[in-house]
Image 1 (cartoon, helix red, strand yellow):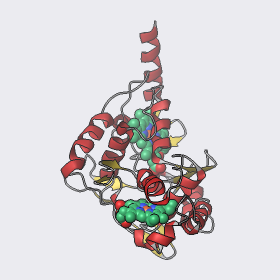
Image 2: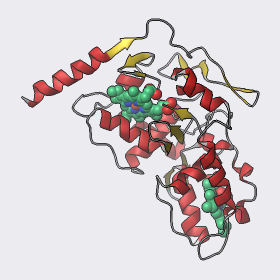
Image 3: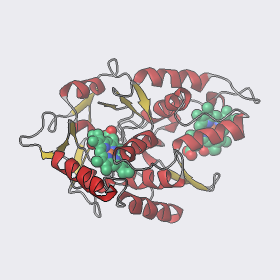
Length: 282
Ligand code: HEC
Ligand code: HEC
């Protein structure tokens, strides 16, 4: 009985996947912000499962695309402003602000493009959220921020913006290699009642329509992203979680080793693209 239901729902989903007949409006558009053109489509590097890597921005409607093309219209920029305020705010038992130790936030240019990365200090593959919280607890004597809190999202957006336009450049060798392999394994594992892997949607079917959604390659170069559906900014983990839940599967916990491994692997699939933080999605 249960098995029939599973088969039926998966079949319904596959039937719902329709090839976009004409080139989808927007797929050939160029992302220009402040007069600078950001690479949103590029030949894939060697070893990539794609022939070209394409930013999620290209798959969105004209209206959503437009929001990301103008920093005054981009609702993610409100978070960036909050992040810049937090950068200057003293906190914790040391009474220090981020700026007191790190100076100008522009000093973090390039960091987002290299995330996640192996950290000797933390002794693990570290996400941006973990590096920030490590500084808060170890250097500031402050409470860690919750992963999906306004403070954390604002700070990851503000630090991420410093790398906007810089090429994705994650290390997948050395101590990061086993994480990358684990991430790849998860990416191709089928989840949930629908029995779909990440690759079934984002590799086999990008460019096709899934219900009302134009499927992208599931890239993470624009995170944290402002989603109109969420009415706010959200992390990479929140998106991964939502995608697994859509297959009616049980998602990995936010911040878990599985999520981090997946983040590294998915980041590496975006090699050739540039950082777009904060991007805007439907
Ligand atoms: C049943 C199909 C399906 C599966 C399986 C799926 N996703 Fe998605 N995913 C979507 C849809 C639909 C969207 C929204 C449209 C788009 O950007 O593709 C989306 C969006 C995303 C985005 C946002 C891309 C952007 O540019 O903002 C990421 C990242 C992502 N998925 C990653 C994953 C990962 C990792 C997995 C596996 C754990 C996964 N997805 C599994 C359907 C799926
Ligand atoms: C008391 C000094 C101090 C304060 C205050 C401080 N940090 Fe740090 N932070 C450090 C030190 C030391 C390191 C490790 C060396 C380095 O990479 O700069 C570090 C590392 C980092 C890193 C990793 C950098 C990298 O390249 O790997 C990030 C991100 C970071 N801090 C963010 C913040 C943020 C955000 C704040 C404010 C919420 C903050 N830090 C406050 C001292 C501080």
